[in-house]
Amino acid sequence: MSKYEVSTITLAEQCHLIGALRDLGYEPEVHADGAALVGYQGDERPERAHIIIRRRQLDSASNDIGFARDGSGVYRAIISEYDRGIGFNDAWLGLIAQSYKERQTMAVAKAKGYVFRGREVIDTPQGRTVQLRFAVR
Image 1 (tube, rainbow, N blue to C red):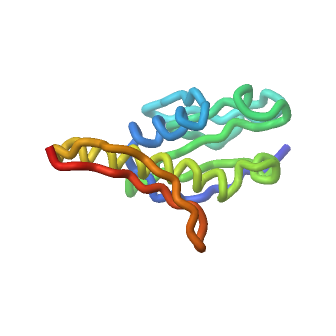
Image 2 (cartoon, rainbow, N blue to C red):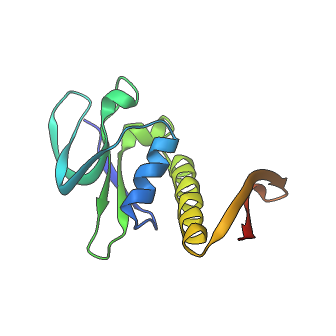
């Protein structure tokens, strides 16, 4: 049985987190009061989460991956040791965070009346960055 590890990620808006997970091809379940995660043997685990990617969407030997909102409103990623080892690690969480931030930026820009003009991925010495372009209406 894999041990679950908890990572705090600075994502607080449920709609953008769900959207980011969908951008990566997952269909997350949402549970207002939280639901139990399921291990790779189909066993219900004591860990609970508000947003869950069920194991059938991952690897055949995976456990569920969950995102639980803590008392301060920030989500904690609950990922098993096994799943971290096969790629659901900090880099994967970074992809979620990037998509989340893009969605959040788009929502704020739209609310302020900006018009989206395009998205560009730029290679820099520090790595790839995403540039979103907006114009004033």
